[in-house]
Image 1 (cartoon, rainbow, N blue to C red):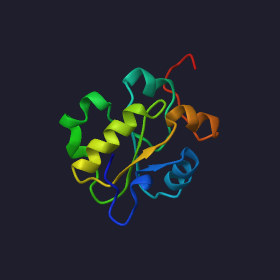
Image 2: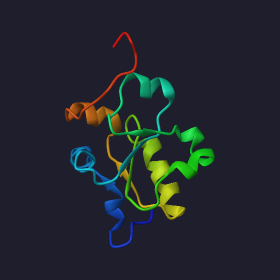
Image 3: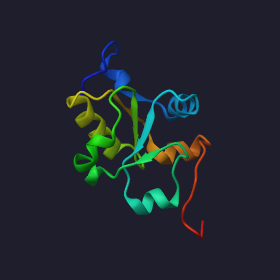
Image 4: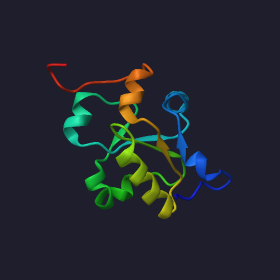
Amino acid sequence: MSQALPGRSPSESEISVEEAIGRVAAGDGWLLDVREPHEWRSAHAPDAHHIPMSELLSRQDELPDDETIYVICHVGGRSRSVTDALLAAGYPAVNVAGGMLAWHAADGPVLSLDEDN
């Protein structure tokens, strides 16, 4: 079980994709996409910051420590693991349930870097 953010219950270390879309659009937090580069290129949220899960330890200095980090992947497994690790390291992290699959289904904004998409 992951730790909750200060003042939040453990269940609040995960939010719905709809809530994440609203919070990111409002500028409330930092969206971290932990998918692999080819996944990022195919489609990602316009305001997301890309640090693949495999690079997170070496790029930890890029993470903000003064705002909520909303962590997203494809369906939610990797982002849950990253959220747990970030919470254990003292970062204010929240998993985005359902990942980019749910983001697409909820009509969240996306960009594609692939030329054939």
